[in-house]
Image 1 (cartoon, rainbow, N blue to C red):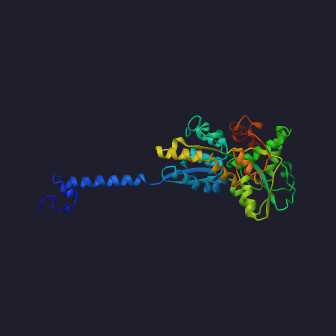
Image 2 (cartoon, rainbow, N blue to C red; image 1 turned 120 degrees about the vertical axis):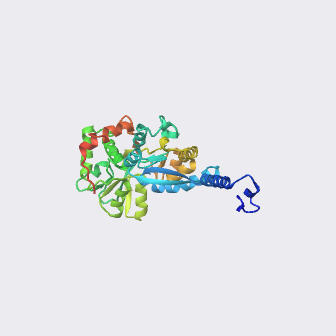
Image 3 (cartoon, rainbow, N blue to C red; image 1 turned 135 degrees about the vertical axis):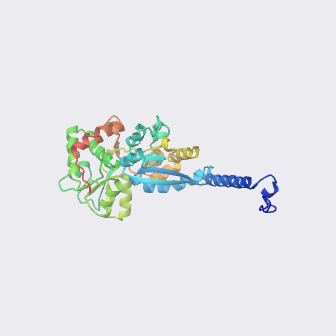
Length: 354
């Protein structure tokens, strides 16, 4: 058989007489690679949002709305994946490379700053988005049993003898850290001394039968397993627990609590490719849009836009919220003062794993 006589008559390759068998194979391989490359370019982008424990429902609601808008505006097809856990633990996993976050939506500014200190975020990261990269706020409130049988209305009520307190561990959980800061601030912002605040925190942890690693586990212990007399919870978690309990639980708003400031950022060191970088930025910018702010309010978080917050005052009532600057210079100083090795927390609590 003459060389090249295997070519299919009428094929495009058969019409090129100078191609030998090897050249044909090379041409076919080249066309195959082009087809594979084109196929890959159409594959959805993958975005990982590493978040804190209670935001599962929030981003479950936000993600499809964002993706629909992104595609409508000409963006690449994309899929958004979520990871949830105690805020401080999540930050440590990102720093260690165990979670390859494209974006983080964590419970405290200091948890995001921890990524910047390890070179994962660019300098000036908090100024890249509105409101210092804080699309919503929250606070710590009390969840109690129906009828509030123990009359728990203010922070001193939480530490009365015989009261069993459910709260997460301040070493791993944003909820746990904010509980500690709220309790401390409830003393010192109303005229108490730091000595009194330290004694208050010590007693609070004595009232806790255990300290679970994250907010959702604390909620399960209180609402589902019916352990404890009061749950010190994120406001959005409190609203969810009460709604699911069908009359068995209620919220008691203390006269004063802390203004929690969950914070978001794209993780510069993990963004590979211009398309992924654009997606990550657009995703976080969307959180500040009116559409997303309405979803945020509906899910029990306090939107940073006052006009939208006021529309939801029936579920998110006004409450005296003190800023972190009432008890420390800023969030980073609060992290060092309270939660670093040999900080205040180390002097007042003993770990109580369940």
